[in-house]
Image (tube, rainbow, N blue to C red):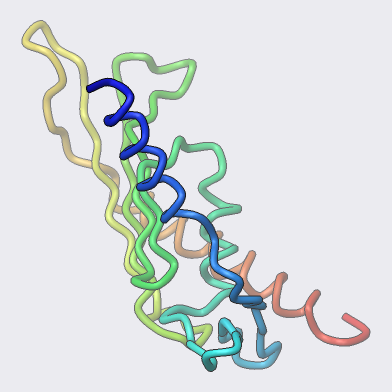
Length: 151
């Protein structure tokens, strides 16, 4: 019975292997649109790649829980700064547009404080989301300029 289970698992894993599809990422430097080109055609991602990469760069100090480049959502895990172990934050970034625009980002910051009962929700400083947005947009512009020929 164990041998049959091992063979079945092996067949399932073999089916999960990579295809012979020689896909390549193509990026339009001006718009920041990223597409996947393959033998079966070209599929465009739903977000601006400069905003995507700038968000990952900016949030690199946070442990990430989930990233979805097609849907444009990045969710961090809870993070406590070394100097404030009784305070933690979690950040969710939504990239809403394929263009590099300030209104193409929505950032939600969640904060908790530790009490005798455990972690309790607390109000996050509204400036935190604004500062993160500014940092991401600045980094996205830097990436866009660096990607231009002679940039």
